[in-house]
Image (cartoon, rainbow over all chains, first blue to last red; front, side):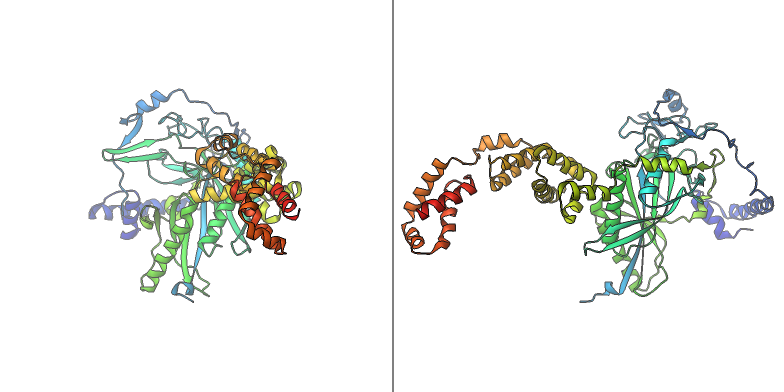
Length: 96
Length: 480
């Protein structure tokens, strides 16, 4: 199980505010995720390439030619909010 | 006198992010250009759309390999791209593609010259590829994100903690900047953020072998600030230690307006980023034959240019060093020589007059008000006897202030050198007539007064008389 401090640190990095109940909940829940990961470590993966999606014989490089995408408007339209063609988000404040 | 500060030593390591001079981004074909309209160089890959896949820019890899060769690194045949996970809107994928466990090269070194005249070797821990992030602009109503820069190719060059003073760090940075510029790897523009430096700084008592807790100083984006910022941070840490306080591992930023470092955040450690190999990218293979190809096409490095200058232009080791300190300066010098065909005079003018004026105004060679062509023209006019070296300095000052051509200034101010022997003789006669006592003394054997007469003639002609001719004629007149 994770310690209370570990949960609070992860919450801080994720910019989440947790109630006391939630801290206890995640101590247990995240701990179970980690236990499962520990179990997965037993699988031997060092010799196989199956961890990669990319076929190994594929040409891995692209020539350095610049080309505009052409679908900019669609990309901008996808954004929940825009400010003069910039993606607009709630103000980010550096937390301390 | 020994001060409190002398009982401590600083341990400094630098991390430099250098933007690669490619046409397109690292993992997509969007243009890599500065100053484009907001969110124009964007596509599904660099905006992190689901289902999009990265493809590696071959040229970016080659430029990285060039840097590795120039910095004497060992290149890995196979390295891997990793995801560095962090939550911030400047990288909408939620991770930055970087390299972690297996960077493409390691174990390099860079030799820097110190003001003491000594050389010091600084180790390069590693260089790895990564993509740049976008830009957040913070406003009162929210944060506006521009993703033009997201995905632009970078190399991060990490040094060993081998530096002990801010001067060493500054020299390392200058040498590194110069190599990247010479190699056409990075344009080195610090104002545009294309060459950025973070410094890891800790202090310890002299003689101590363990490192103190390090503080990361972010975004030192000017050579002028590097030394100042590092010195300030060293002092801050020594003060804390002296007060018995512990130094916290944190990230600070340099505030150049207030001349202090300020807290940005408590430092995340590597495991907070949950690095793992990017499953979308196959391992990066840089074969020996590819490395050899890049090696064979390497642009001239500063040391090579320095040797060429010594050989071709017969310059001293010192002058060659000064003139090759940056690629811009070396090109400027070469161009000046091309115009006036006088390597020695060009070296003096560029290294003394030009650099002196530029330094005084805090300007770089690329924004010099006097072009290489104009300076070469000026030197040519001295060599042809049109103006004296002394007058040329006045003309140069005027060129620097007004950007005008030397011919225009010489004409407008009537500075053309007087080489007309008749005109000079008239002046000499006048000077002798006005100073009968000195003339008599000279005739009586006080030959030192020769210099007095030369000086008077030069004064009468406002320095415009050809000094060689004046010397000859004064001698002739006095001794006749």
